[in-house]
Length: 373
Image 1 (cartoon, rainbow, N blue to C red):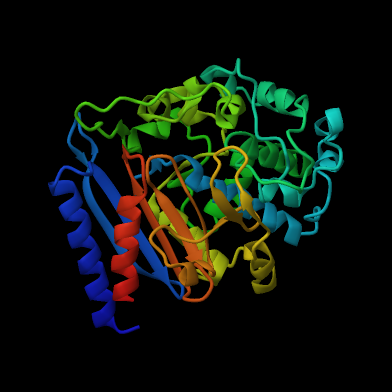
Image 2 (image 1 turned 30 degrees about the horizontal axis):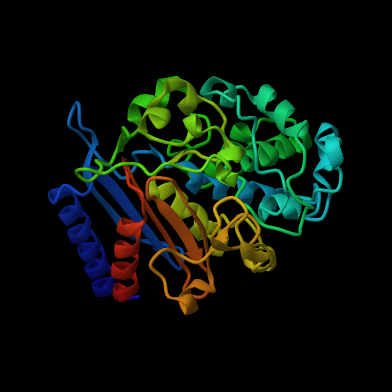
């Protein structure tokens, strides 16, 4: 790619995110794009902490919820490549207690593609409980199946992280945060920008979350109590700014979510697609297997059509159906989004601290990048 083209796309992305902040639509955000292993966009706009005026920087991490599920999934692929277990190995082989109540046949593959049939946590769960690893793993191990594993798909919003994390812990003898640092974020040089649990002493570097203001006169529609999503987790645990600014939730391992800068998570996707300064996280053959369509269907929890590879959703926000076929990634509550594209070699991330109800910012910047590259 020519230096002129690279400079132009950097300039166009910077202009677009500056306008988002100046219009009041966003408080602060980052965009990072790698192409063929090179960082071609590193753009920042706005403030990380409105109370102090601290500006956003390229290395500012932010709690962007499910975006970091992709890092948990990547660790699983790395362990499979190391021969620790296979995709069709039952989780109970590594974590015997998980096999209770008919779950003995649930496989690693089914956890990764959200067909495991274990999408719910107890409706009595509190935020403090989410921060208690042993308590959450015990509750999930004792849970019953919602469907026969592998036959239906439904987003495992919270349980995904604990199942993956406990599998990693049982196999390595280390908490998933340590494995992330030793195997992924450390080798990639982003250990200060990519976290599950983030030490309290580091939290002052985070962007502060805020909820996007609701339109004048907006009233939240009353939700029927029998909705599957209402049974998968207490509504009090729906992610919001207050949840994501708490010291305890930031410090805890809740690997269904995490803290990252755009630069760090984009770098991870780039190191899946190819080498980054000599580091490639998994082989090309493993990448093809990990990012192939694994299951398509109507999501049993949210009721919309969904397509998953192993640990990554298929398609990027703002992409055409044809473009989506080679894109794999995860978006998060609030509008942050990151993905890799096996056809173009692009790794893209947008993270932000104002929690919106859609991915419109990411979709707009996706189109700027697509048109520029």
